[in-house]
Length: 142
Image (tube, rainbow, N blue to C red):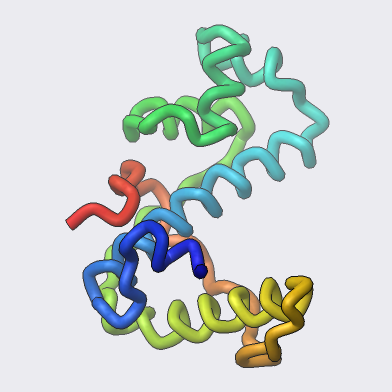
């Protein structure tokens, strides 16, 4: 059984797709921040010192265990000399690319699954730039 089905997520429902999109982009934002920290060869302790918080708090931020306030996100970005760009777009403007990406990812997982299901959409371009800085969405909330 697919994870979406277990969680009661209907990818045919625009509200569920929107929630999924927001969560995935929040996760991508954190990944990008961590990648920038690594690029600078900074430790979590270095970032914590610059932010004025504990290393364990930085660890929780990077694991996605904290619901980031914009001020915390801003302080993290400043600590790694980065800029977070906020952008608001209508979901219908990005929904088609999001659906295609989800099918592509599902196909890649299915292709490597022992059951050997066939691959879905191939050749989808990499995810477009992150709609960054949105407070973490409640996963699959309505």
